[in-house]
Length: 300
Image 1 (cartoon, rainbow, N blue to C red):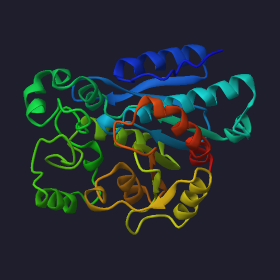
Image 2 (image 1 turned 90 degrees about the vertical axis):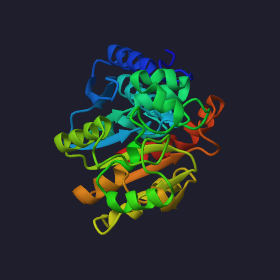
Image 3 (image 1 turned 30 degrees about the horizontal axis):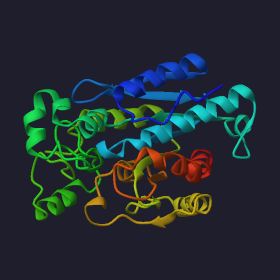
């Protein structure tokens, strides 16, 4: 039985189709929107398992990083296949690993940004002129949502400090990347993830980005002592580097907010190496190198 998650450019329509196909093939996988984007696109969440120890894996926060959605969906599919066929995955007994656990996958946090990254300013609807002026038709440039807000700068974690740093860089409004918005949590995509976390009480969270082959695990005084060890185990499984973000990536991110709010582990994994958008031809090597690490990130 072949993979439903085939190697292809992945936009919101493809994600929606794969969510439907995966839940049809694997009835134990549940799916529902966790919210909607600026342009009204569903932000799909898929839940595997019913255990009390819940973990979240979310991807495609940035438009040009759509390959991370494909990684997220392929991992979800491989887990489902292993459960259905009662077979091992990368030497993991998945049925045993899932005992008492559940995993929520949100493969595309920023569907509007992905559409703009793939198709240009015409994908932005009523915001097309602003997107065009901000460089939405430049290949490899667009990371923000349809409001010109960088979702991973919009969380309420050091947001004021981040705003000051953005302004020093000349970023003061609607932008292709790195504008944190008019206020923290201004964007529906940000609020959707926050609402999901409030409802689900996750044990820890994993955010997939690209690129750099790095693992970020720390944010402020609320970082749990176990987080560094967890990150180093993930690094050992992949050859990735345990690191800390710098500059404008130092505040406002999803894992920053989760750590500071809940005092629980949160991780950002920068998949692959190269220049965003990473080419589809890199998918196989990226996924194979990261797969064991991603399993570790869910089951630690």
